[in-house]
Every structure is written in structure tokens, then in C-alpha cells.
Length: 106
Image 1 (spheres, rainbow, N blue to C red):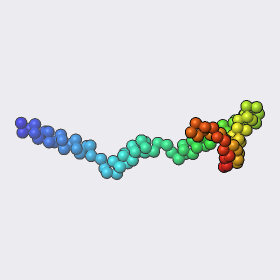
Image 2 (cartoon, rainbow, N blue to C red):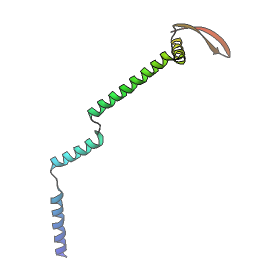
Image 3 (cartoon, one colour):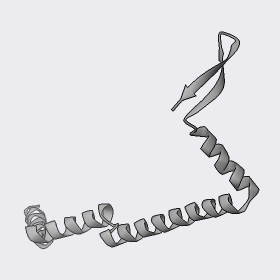
Image 4 (cartoon, rainbow, N blue to C red):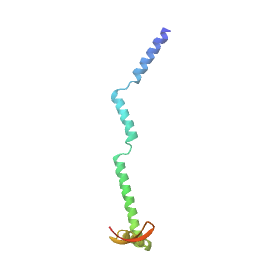
């Protein structure tokens, strides 16, 4: 029984000795894990993604403008947008069940 107890203690001591890591190694491992989990997108990737988003947005705006200039539907749509921003216009509103015309100003 005493031999088993001694063997267990020796085995435990040897396992602890073999599995102990230097504190610098532990910090490096944890830093690597953290970088992999939380900082996987590098600055280069962010910049590249921003360029893509800007390019796609610019292409979409150009297509909308091209569509607006080239077709009657697009010109009508642009005219409707312009009409929304007229400085003075009359609008019909309903107050207490009655239709009224009001002069509105931006």
C-alpha cells in the first residue's frame, strides 16, 4: 500500500513537472488564441473591404443617375424628387374630417 502511495506521488510530481510551462510561453499562447478569435480581421482586410463597399456604392449611384438621365421613368422619378423639395407649395391635409389647403414653406 505504501508503495502504491509513493508511486502515485511520484507520478503526480512528474506529470506536474512535465506539464508546467514558462509564464512567457503561456502568455504567448493566450495572445495567439485571442488574436485568432477576436482580431482575425487585419487592417489590410478592413481597408480592402472599405474599398469594395465604396466601389459598389459608387457603381450603384452611377447606375441610378444613368437610369435617371436615359429613361422617361427615371426623369419622372427625378422630377418627383425635385417636387418634394420645392420651397413653397400648397398641400391638402385633412383636419377633423375636413380637407384644407395650406401653403407650406421649407
